[in-house]
Image 1 (tube, rainbow, N blue to C red):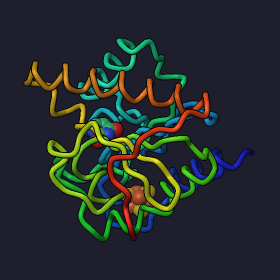
Image 2 (tube, protein in one colour):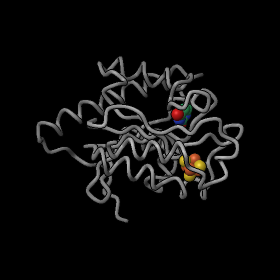
Image 3 (tube, rainbow, N blue to C red):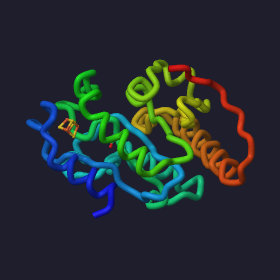
Length: 196
Ligand code: URA
Ligand code: SF4
């Protein structure tokens, strides 16, 4: 069993926080373990809870479309969430749930070692970088502890907003332009140096 499969099994069996009592399935990250990028969302919703896979509902469709538009297949990347079990009624996961679950995200990151982490929306922005107001910071590149992050909106925000779907698509194109530059060892300009 590879190391990512070990994390997956641990997530599936996890009972470390109360979300285990209300979930149907936990939702480990999914995708290419050699990906240059990890996408990090908030938490599973109804469809994800039912299927045990991240971003398979309406928001997931938006993310897939934005990736396809940029010429990227979902299978090429790795997609996960801050919290791996669905909060009741899709409420925002609380601090305790996020802190308890963070060891899994940390492990996913340390195993995959992505060139960049794509932060999707406010909950991920807050959990991973302590930020808020993603709409102000979207499109920006952050560096923290030698890890690069790219900030964009949550795909769910685009469901009823045509303007935001083009924002998400534009950001995803920029992200993969950046990844290309990183692979070619080009200097990229960081917008925010995060001092922890
Ligand atoms: N929203 C998320 O943040 N994650 C999912 O997996 C699905 C919807
Ligand atoms: Fe475990 Fe995370 Fe699920 Fe809580 S949300 S039970 S910490 S996997």
